[in-house]
Length: 207
Ligand code: MN3
Image 1 (spheres, rainbow, N blue to C red):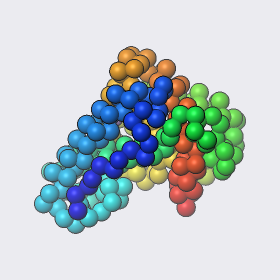
Image 2: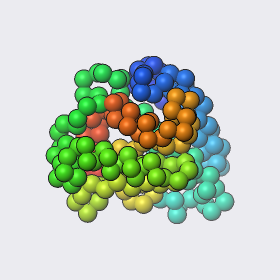
Image 3: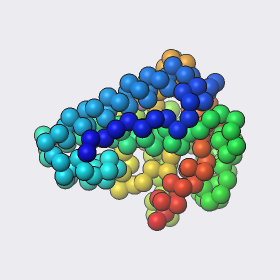
Image 4: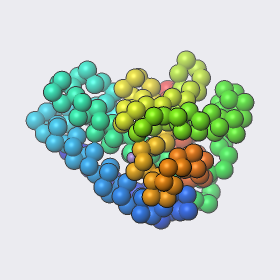
């Protein structure tokens, strides 16, 4: 079964003014679609691998033949990461979007980082420093939340870590609106985080 691009769970303009409509069209319709096309092409002669969910696929890179492993890591990672990314965001100013987190994730953030502002600062600083293209992530390991970054489209899943949330700092994610001002993009992004979805992912990370 070839992977397919799901529609965004909101309108292309729903994240304005924090993420602009044109960026959302290019990012979802062109970049995410390209990752899907590339991983599908790599798996064309590997039906058993293609039958896995993309998250299962990239959770076990050693199961992938060496001649396609790099392509699958990059493009399967791209598909998984962007699927997560669209779903942990929501329409700006809608209830439960942006602002302060609620629920279990709010309590765990307070326990591990002191408060939400300290957590945001730590996440933004770590992610701003990711050299070149990559992602900033929140994971749960050894009973604690941890901020990590990865290069390229590498997923925490490939390290045995379930991503609770992640922000894309490839230039394609922000350059049209923010140009070289990655820290401004990082600061604005929190306005569109869907905390209900993040709480769901936190529950899964703990299970
Ligand atoms: Mn991207």
